[in-house]
Image (cartoon, rainbow, N blue to C red):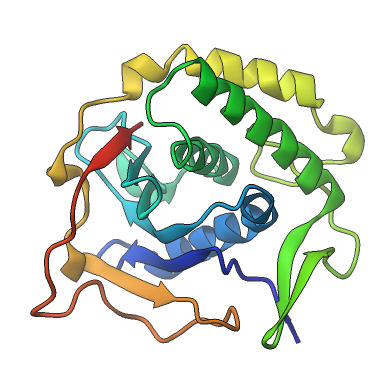
Length: 231
């Protein structure tokens, strides 16, 4: 049976003490699935994708040690029971993946972000993902059935005619970058959730979920926290 997982991400983690944490996990799984083909193309690896809910209400994401961990805000800053639009979370994920290659918000960073955004539009239009069957790897699999492509900035599927072009998507990204200086902040360890508040779902070599476990077991060494981006 084909498993639509992302082997390029080691594990997913949500805040188990927050309401609707099962739904939060489904969001992370969906985001991981949707960037799987892009990550294969660009040889991107992420150790862990984690939900976080920072006190700074402008923060949307964080990349630790160039992909060792990516943290994403899933919930509205003023109501933890209400989730952000899924396409907004996908946009944040693309931003943080770009930090795997470029640390500062400079011209090289935004050129790559525009490239990833435009490529995601094409991948979504074609319904591509990086699929696996058993222990064998099957690349560039299209899902069974006809799935309407989705564009960044929407929370529901749209017809092909309603999707913005790659150049329009790049223009939107250019507008978004102008706001980066307002919602990027210096690193702070308080932004990260406590390990004991996380439910971690590991992904094994077959792309299957391993049973959830606490974020860190007692006796483990604390993680190095060189944060290269907060957005």
